[in-house]
Length: 197
Image (tube, rainbow, N blue to C red):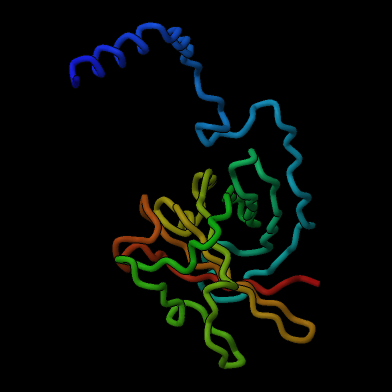
C-alpha cells in the first residue's frame, strides 16, 4: 500500500509543469544601501561667515589677527556640511562636521571637556554644544611662526560662550589619525577668539 501511494505521488509530481527558473538580477543601488545616482542633490543653505579676533595668548601667538569662519555646504548627500577656518596669518583649515563626535571620548568613555573649555558662568560644559570637525585640508604658509595648531592638525572642536554683547569661541586642536584619540597626547592646545561685531 505504501509503495502504491509513493508511486502515485511521484506520478503527480512528474505531471506538474516545471516552474520557470527566475533570472538573477543585479541588486539596485537602493538595495545595496546606496543613494539613487539620479536623485537630485540640493544641499541645505549655510549661514554667513563670522569674524573673530585672537583673544587668548595661544591664539595671539599661533594665529594673530582675524579669524574668518565660513560655513560650507554639503559636498554630497552622504556628507555633513563643514566650515573653513581662515586666519589672518594665512593658515587655513578646510573641515567637515563630525556630528556626535564631541560625545565620544578615549576608550569608549564619554568625553570630558571640562579641562579644555570654560564657561564663565560656571555652567558645566555640554558636549552636545561642542561642534567637532575633521580637517580635510590644512594650509600653513612657509615661515609661519609656530606653524599650525599641530604638526599636522586632524580635528578641531569648537565651543561658543555667549553673553550680552559678546561671543567667545574656543578651539581645541588635535592631531592623530582617529577620533576619539588614543590618549591625551593628541591634544595640541586650546585657542580662544572674541567675535567681531
